[in-house]
Image 1 (spheres, rainbow, N blue to C red):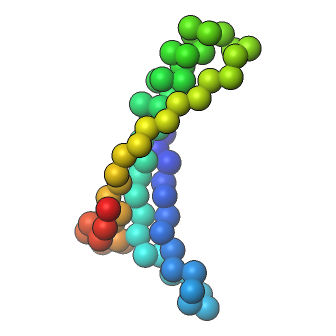
Image 2 (cartoon, rainbow, N blue to C red):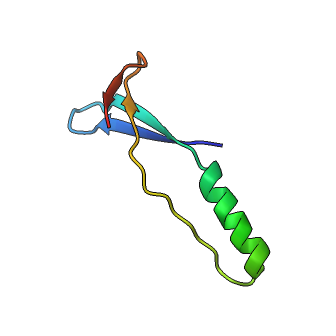
Length: 65
């Protein structure tokens, strides 16, 4: 399941959608699952991935990264 990131302009009286990006969570969840299987559920597990995402407008055109 992806995490949808919304970029909105909140400086206007009515906030407007500028763009959105999708962050895939499968890679992070796989790493956390491996840690849980190795260490057990009694040990806190966390993982992270640093990446650059492309932001798309409502028409599907890339507007930034």
